[in-house]
Length: 91
Image 1 (cartoon, one colour):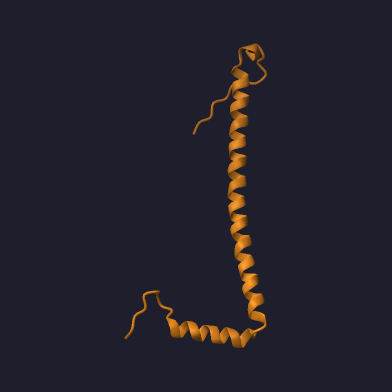
Image 2 (image 1 turned 135 degrees about the vertical axis):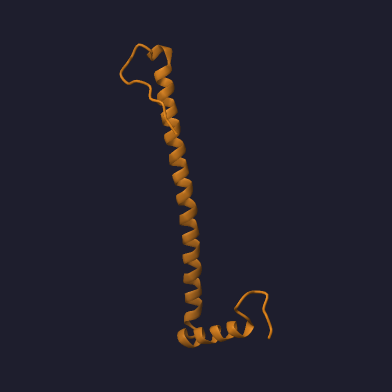
């Protein structure tokens, strides 16, 4: 028995899968399917990368706003203005 280094799919299985796909979809549809699959993967990667970055930027901006508001409250010029008490964040 021959074992393959790349896992459970060997050369014969891969050729059989390609032949079945060719018979099901035909030679003209394969390039369209490959393009669609590639575009879908690119769009998915782009969306996940941009989503994380946008979320991180919003979190940082929110933290900066909180710090700015707290610093303005502690400013000696605003010390006599007691509209809102200074709140401390507990983590």
